[in-house]
Image (tube, rainbow, N blue to C red; front, side, top):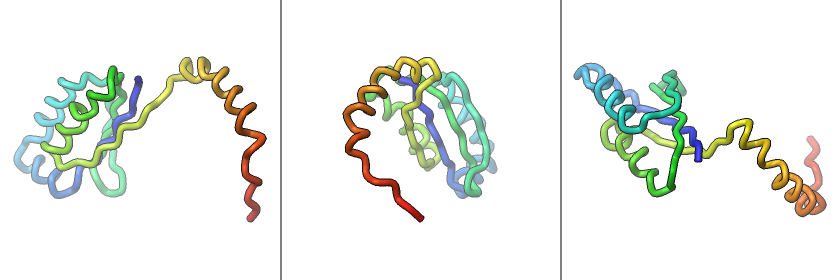
Length: 112
């Protein structure tokens, strides 16, 4: 299953890793193990952050994704399942079934 892995590195541990000239090697080593389809680095809420796109073969692999970031960088990690456009197109019959079953039971729209 394709997943988006979101990592936020706290300012203190990120700064320490940069001052010690370790951040590049640590992140590089983790990426060598994970082999993401894509990797993006940016700033979020005043911290260093990254998004990785991975193909997760089995849920039992979640610790192998998260623990390196937890242990080496004291980072926050979120793993979110994601679909490609092709996956979404395949989901059409399931969406139709959900509409038939659940739309008649939906709650009334909230008004402002």
